[in-house]
Length: 347
Ligand code: NAD
Ligand code: TDX
Image (cartoon, rainbow, N blue to C red; front, side, top):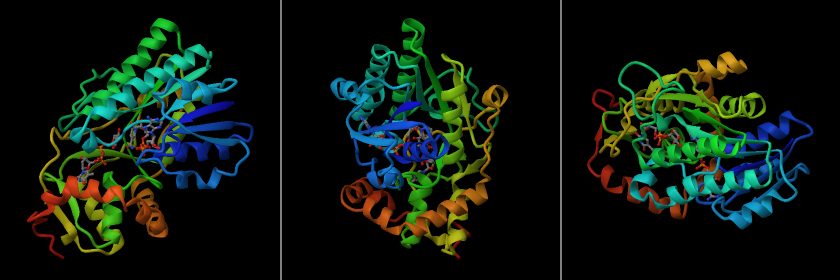
């Protein structure tokens, strides 16, 4: 199979490209990525010299660039390209619409024009909104996105649905919970806290820190995306989750304990606007239809991930310089001034 993987220089995309090239000896991949702040060719370093892989820099919202990248055609498009960070969407939603919404429509149009055999849209559980203390999102849960990021992803999902319904584009959608693992940009909770802890910097925990996320190792997500791409029923949505709900405070403590750093590094800072309280995924559909279940156990997966960041200090130190410093100051500077530590945990 020949694949166009968009956003393949980002966290999940880079893991996916490496997974496919290692798993299918005959598959070829064109990675198409704009290399925004989140894209990094170093994430593809292990496959850059692979003759079955080609990298093209380009914008998914640029029709001419997408058409050129499709060349003589591909069998499938897997769309990971997105603006992916909720906090950035709260500060400025504009680019989320261009990339996540317009970009997805451009890819759908190109898929139709080129007769691409499969189109997989990588979506998120955040399109379903927020849960109370019980229950889980199924594929039938109504869309109720709460952040500009989630709204842009929900809009993209609806455009994918419409392209399938109206034009018969052979499209599929996956909606996954929170990923963690190697190559994740250190703006997201786990890599931010791991790298801050490694540098003895404070860990900014939003609000009471009791929000719940369902953590899944990126390898399990990539395996699920690939299974849906090759064996899923077109026009369908498949949820993927880790079956592993944790409060943010618990994750922060686990990271510090694993690294042997004091819990006093945790700082309660002002909450994220519109912060979703809890996500949980009902993944029974993909289990039943495609036999997928997550394999990586959280404690072990988190240990391995922490070890990866410890061993790749040069990777994250480079990423955390330059524009990242301005982002960090804008997002956390004022919030960290006078922020409280975690009561009873001043060890
Ligand atoms: P990421 O921010 O690490 O990577 C995004 C990649 O897309 C980067 O390489 C970036 O350069 C590229 N990109 C951005 N705008 C582009 C454009 N206009 N044209 C081409 N490339 C562009 O994101 P991620 O965490 O790897 O997420 C990948 C996908 O998975 C996203 O669609 C996201 O919504 C979805 N998702 C993420 C998670 C998660 O926990 N991280 C969970 C569920 C779904
Ligand atoms: O500094 C922080 N402090 C903090 O308490 C950050 C960055 C996050 N948090 C909290 C907010 C969330 O409750 O941690 C939780 C996880 O936050 P993020 O890593 O920003 O992820 P989330 O907002 O849950 O969204 C993620 O999962 C779904 C990804 O970023 C999305 O791309 C994906 O679609």
